[in-house]
Length: 179
Image (cartoon, rainbow, N blue to C red; front, side, top):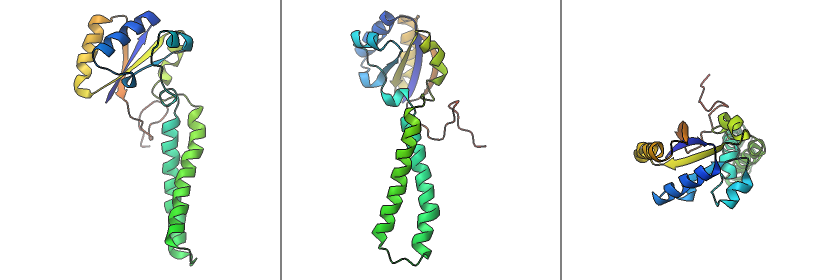
């Protein structure tokens, strides 16, 4: 899936975009709006972005689980193999699962308070009263949707394209840095 990011000035334009996309077959689950005007989104019955779209919760949980897995493999596996403790295998597996889950739980605390890395670059525009419209479309239809938006809604400015899937390795700027 490809995610298209549009900035729109007025909620009435967002409503028109929503109606056109729904007529084209795009469901509410593939159409998200981020705005500081939550009441306006509610009264216009627009699908506001979920907590997973607005915060980095999912990405931080994934990171925490990966850290828990690394710790489990680094400490629990050697203990299970070389410690001489007579614990049954299921106890070691349970301890490893606990490490992974605890890492995800602890990571969630950081993620719920952090703005999503994909929408962070639009923070100032959203605070200035603009509406960020995110549309998820299959890659093969992305060009058609872009063209339709350009023809029917020139007031919606395409600002970015990206994936609708989280990348736990992405840095704050949204890119993966190996060094």
